[in-house]
Amino acid sequence: MEQSPHKEQHTPGNTYNASDHLANERTFLAWIRTSIGIMAFGFVVVKFTLFIKQIALLLGKEADIHQHGYSSFIGILLVAVGAFTTLLSYLRYVRIKKQLELNSFKSSSMLIIVLTLLILLISISLVTYLVQST
Figure 1 (cartoon, rainbow, N blue to C red):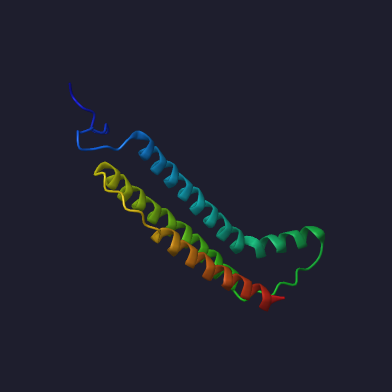
Figure 2: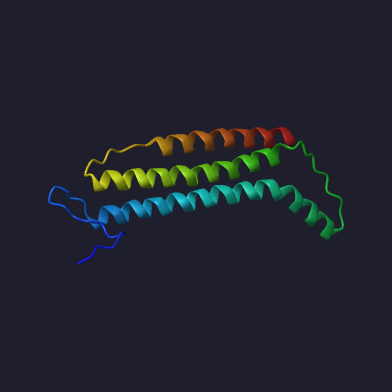
């Protein structure tokens, strides 16, 4: 009987189970949703000034917007962080998959630490920009 190349083989020394792999996939998909959310927020930050101008035109008023270019930079940075999160989450998924297959899982919170620090720095930049622009 020929084995499918995608079917995992169980050997006597290997004690992984399907629920571990499914949990790894769910975690990967959660990270993907997070990265999409970060990129969407970055897009909103970049386009918010344009939205305000459009609303002002619809209301027949002139929009008084102080634009220093920071919102575009911060928004683009958020989109880049979202893309970076996608890459790191895929690498984490592959690493954990191999560890589960070898029955040698080692927990790592590097992705969480990196993402937290990046989002914190961007948030501080965004708050600083908002305080200066008011």
